[in-house]
Image 1 (cartoon, rainbow, N blue to C red):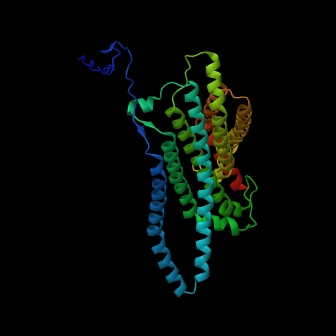
Image 2: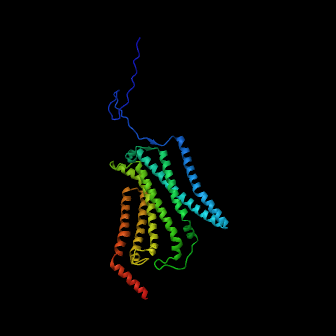
Image 3: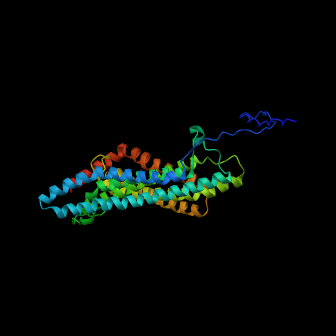
Length: 358
């Protein structure tokens, strides 16, 4: 009777690339673990996350509002309570919707572009994923970015929720009939209008900065560009990322330009000169520098809009560097050196003596 020869299973290959028992030279490639559970678990996780946010919101706000409503109803101020309630939550809801849509749309575009770059081989291996030893699944990454967008939007909305009185003064404030001597604006503009404009500008600038940094971090997660490759690969990477980054930078620079325009009116509150208010330097130097920065911001925005349709990553870097250098020299160096001169102080003091004698 002939015995059947025993079957020999091929041995597993070594990770270092040495031949195994059956002569094969296959190499075991260890891939980082992927973060993200099965698809059936993702929906309950989303529902649990939303439910936790609702429970925290109810426990944080409902008891205080009930107490305030009972107190104001006893004083026959029920109408005032509901007015404040509608204004506060109206501002909160509007700010939350704007922030979460802006963040989520940009995160979604960044993930889509990053995945396309990774598939086409235009980026190197992600340094972040390599160091952490973790590769997140696309679904888990979208869920994490969505949670980040919700948290950032909540913080953005809370700022408007807390400044409800600023909005009411802006909405119902009127003119005083008294104009300032420098810009000719009514005093009511400084009391009622300007604080709300500054609130909008500061928070929109913060939102633009957070979004830009988060999008850059998302692109870095998918890997740095292969600048060692040929010119076509660099142009292809720039064509994918430059339009998106140009749009984000355009929004940020527009917010900065608006901020420089509002800074003109804040010169009336300046404390950097010899006296309180708009001194000689603020009137003759700083005001001109602010107008130059507004014009530079408008020019940079136009260049960034053009760069959306003709993407060039190098033009973004050069224009941004010029703008930052102009800001440092014009806003910090020139006014500080001019206000520190003895001639400037003597001219302003002589002007004050002349105005007093007349």
